[in-house]
Length: 228
Image (cartoon, rainbow, N blue to C red; front, side, top):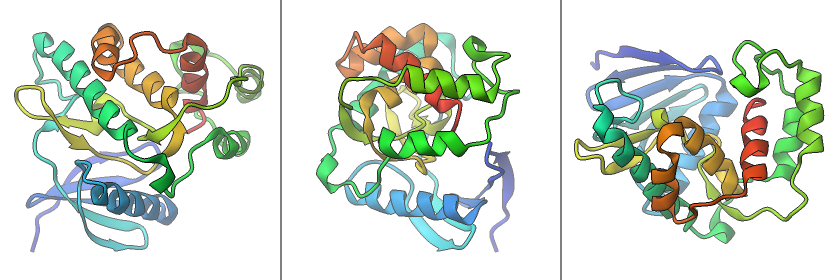
């Protein structure tokens, strides 16, 4: 019998345990199903991510990836630029997957209506939005929605440091927490990734291959993330 040790509780209320080279996640059935479906598809594309071992309503068991998360406090400061570049490299690889073969939609046609009905945690806003009401956030979201077409890729949806694992030399070993993976504008991932590695975002963007992303889109997608 596996001895499961608690790891964390996510924003959605999902709980995570680790034991014997595996992770167990329990949470809202729809979120767990989304994670399982996306892991199965992503692994089938040859992209490094956990493998699904068992899935039942509200419960998911996966393999553990090697390495440690980018937000692990044990990383020395001198490694941060390498970690940022590693995330940029991994995003470039993810975004190169064929959009036409991805069955998951995370475009604005879906995410804007979801934002309109979302319950925003007003106690956990970015500093730029601190003190804003839900109505103000939504008005700003509609007012700043990009007029240009979406630059579509297969996106992770939440590529923070916590969701990327690295080997000891800073080489990325894979991505986790993929319940928001789907076809989306590349700036959605870039906005979240550069916010997570703020001081080293130039390293990330250089490794990704787009040193100067659209600043208006970066701002917009960080705002959209408040509703997720």
